[in-house]
Each structure stands twice: as structure tokens, then as C-alpha cells.
Length: 264
Ligand SMILES: NC(=O)C1=CN([C@@H]2O[C@H](COP(=O)(O)OP(=O)(O)OC[C@H]3O[C@@H](n4cnc5c(N)ncnc54)[C@H](OP(=O)(O)O)[C@@H]3O)[C@@H](O)[C@H]2O)C=CC1
Ligand SMILES: O=C(O)[C@@H]1CCC=N1
Image 1 (tube, rainbow, N blue to C red):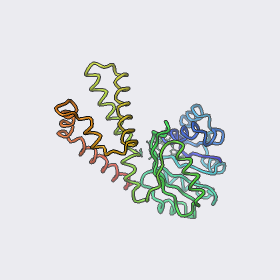
Image 2: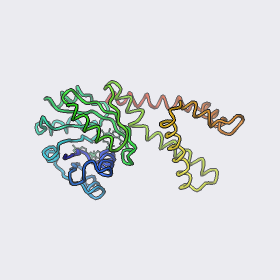
Image 3: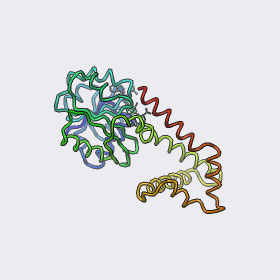
Image 4: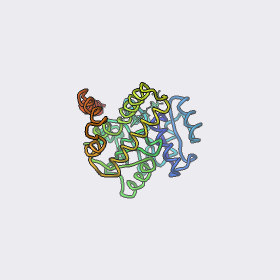
């Protein structure tokens, strides 16, 4: 199976890193194109894949192609490659807002497409990816693409109407979590902890808490109550977080993210 990337930036790197690390497709069966020579050289050096400046070469040498450019470049890239795309090839998209209907219109012909929304934890095999195959994909092809996506984390097939919500809850959310970890580390530094150690403690606490949600099946509120000892320290921190609008700020930020995704 030959895999191609058009765009070899942050998300493409995270995906190819996961696929190669989990030996789903070897590096020498992966090719990436990027307009930026620096982007090409970076993935060539880091992942030992083939690189090219020619998007047509990616299409003509791949069975599956991941369009990993920014949404604003999707129309021009599809216009450039659409005549090369064969009926047996599979296109995986990862851009917010680019619906299957829009993609079909851009290609102007029946193309096998899986619309997805991954995230950068794919790089460490802990991604969360939503997938939405179009009507031209066979069950076997869908199963293979899911195997590919599972090589760098969890994957769920979802109705396309939820894709913008996926952008806000998992596509973009690593950024919010990194901000949270940074803020916790700053507070730990203010308490006298060395910064590198503070990042370790903060990040592991977030990782452990997330694992508790995923592995215990308990409601996050119940897990929060388990930490809040009566008249203890935690409930005072929770009180301040509520006073500062922690939850509502997260919700408002995510609703904004979702709206921007819809507009792309
Ligand atoms: N980063 C993330 O966490 C996530 C990103 N995504 C989606 O993934 C896609 C890529 O995002 P990201 O990796 O962050 O973006 P990057 O800017 O890091 O990577 C995109 C790369 O593609 C290059 N490029 C632009 N136009 C072309 C072209 N016509 N042909 C070939 N290469 C081109 C860009 O060059 P140049 O810099 O010159 O534009 C850039 O090097 C986007 O649609 C994004 O929404 C989805 C989920 C998560
Ligand atoms: O910020 C963005 O537009 C991309 C999509 C989800 C995460 N990054």
C-alpha cells in the first residue's frame, strides 16, 4: 500500500510518525509533497520518507492520499490534482469545514473520500480521529482506512453533521490543554518548583486524569468530587475556578472554534 501526503506540516508529520512507528506502512512506501523545501526536507530527515515538490507525483504514485494543507488551499490543490485521481484511489481529508458535498463538487467526479478530523497527539499514538466515509467507499476500504487511522490513536466513524463539533472537542483541544498545563506549571513555579519538573507534574496529572475518565467510565463530576476532600484544598481551588468562569470560558471558546470551522 503506497501512502501520499500533499502538505508535510504539523498534522501530516504527526500522522506519518504514528503510521511509521506502528509499522502500518513503511517509510519507503510513503511520499510527501510540500511547496516549502524546508517542510519537505524536515520530514525526509525525520521520517526517511520520499519527498517531492510535485503534487502530481504524489497522486500518480500513491493508493491513498492525505490532503494535509490548510483549508484555504484545498480548492487550489484539488483543482491541480483532480484529473490525476483514479477511481480506485482513496482521498483522506483533514481540513475543517470542507464537507463531502463540497469535495465532490470540487473534484467534479466520483472519488473515494474519507473526511476525517485528527489531532496532533497522533504523533505519540494517542490521537483522537473522527472519520466520515463517502458513498463510494467499500466496506473493505473503510476497514483498511480505519486500521490506518487506528495506528495513531482512537478513531470513531461519526455523522458528518458533528464534524465541526469534533474540531472543537478534539481537533483543536490539545491547544487548550497545553495552555492549561502551562498555567499549572507557572503556578507550581511560583510555589518554588523547577519549571521542567513543574511541566512533568502538570502533564502527568492531566494524563492520569484523562486515563481515569477513559478507563473508569465514571462521570468527570464524580471523579472531581473524589478529589475534593471536605474542608480540603481542592474544593477551594474549584471554588475559585468556578468564580473565574473556568467552565463557561471553555464552552464559549469551543463554540467559537466550532463556528469558525463551519465557516471554512
Ligand atoms: N495542526 C493541527 O493540530 C491540526 C491540523 N488539521 C488540519 O490539517 C491541515 C494541515 O494543518 P497543519 O499541518 O497544521 O498546517 P501546516 O501549515 O503545518 O502544514 C501545511 C503544509 O502544506 C504546505 N502547502 C500549502 N499549500 C500547498 C500546496 N498547494 N501543495 C503542497 N503543500 C502546500 C504549507 O506550506 P505553507 O506554509 O507555505 O502554506 C505547509 O508546509 C489543515 O487543514 C488543518 O486544519 C487538522 C487537525 C489538527
Ligand atoms: O487550527 C486549525 O485550524 C486546525 C484544525 C484543528 C486543529 N488545528
